[in-house]
Length: 132
Image 1 (cartoon, helix red, strand yellow):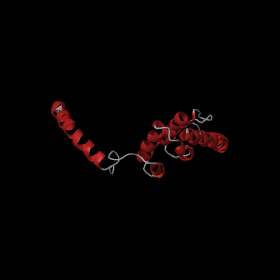
Image 2: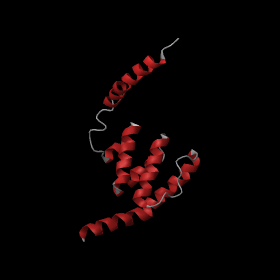
Image 3: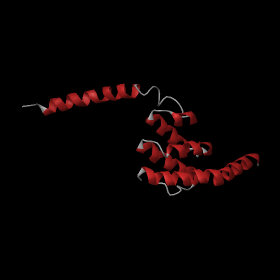
Image 4: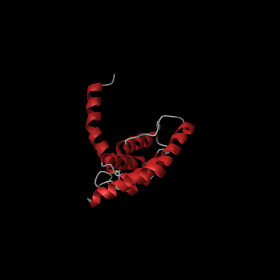
C-alpha cells in the first residue's frame, strides 16, 4: 500500500520550489513593465502580458499590432488581443477568437478597414485633446 498522506505532504512541499524554478525561467517577465515591442515577442506569455497592459492602459498606438495579433496561432493571444481592442476602440468589428481561421480572416479585414477609416480620426482627437 502507498501512504497517501506522506506522499501528499511530500508533493505539497515540492510545489513552491517547482513554481519558483518555473517563474525564474521566465527571464524577468514579471520584473519589468511591458512595452509595445513585447507584442512582437515569440513567447506567447510575454505577448499576452503586453496585450493586457496595452488594453488596460488604452494604448491606442498599439491598435495596429493588436489587430495583427488577431491572426496569432495561439488562441489565448487572440482572446486577449480582441479584449484589448474592445477596451481601446469600443468595438470588436464582429471578430470572435474561437471562429475558424477563414471566418476570423473576414473579421480581421474589417479591422484593417477600421484602421484606415476610424483609427486616424481617433488619433487626431487624442492629439487635439493633448493641446487643450
